[in-house]
Image (cartoon, rainbow, N blue to C red; front, side):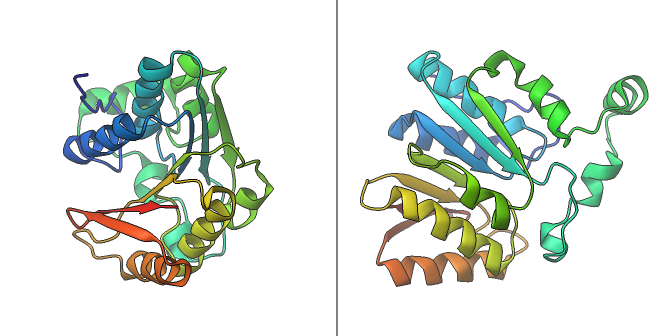
Length: 215
């Protein structure tokens, strides 16, 4: 299968190289019940759902968690980035289309639902801080999780802990973004390292950015 991570004229937290790497991991594992924390503008979500649809047809599920514009007091890393709120596009056509014609916030849950409407029977979007929302969700079937949400130590460790409670001893996969990247987000690395050590888990670091954990 020829993988190509598509950007769909939207902002994305992954460039094409890293998007292709994530898709290749998903293709290898072939999960049927996918969870993503940090939907952002839905680009990664759209690529994931498209790949799962190619692998399984309509027999897959996707659940995405994000603040979707909701404010929180968990710190700057947990707040909707200003570049999402302001939607400053370098491409003038994107500015005209999204800001002037549609007047659409690409990080809103309404916008993401429209963007993923092809898979509307397969997806669920959950708005709010995962310190609260994740523990309320049914995670019993999740076999692959991609974490790129809040980057504070507390949130990353909490996300991992709740997911692991449902995935442990099942040989499932958790991929954490920003383990180490150009900005070196130390709290993500520390949270992942502490969690893996406490639970004696296998971890594989992919080019310093993705931390792949097998439960």
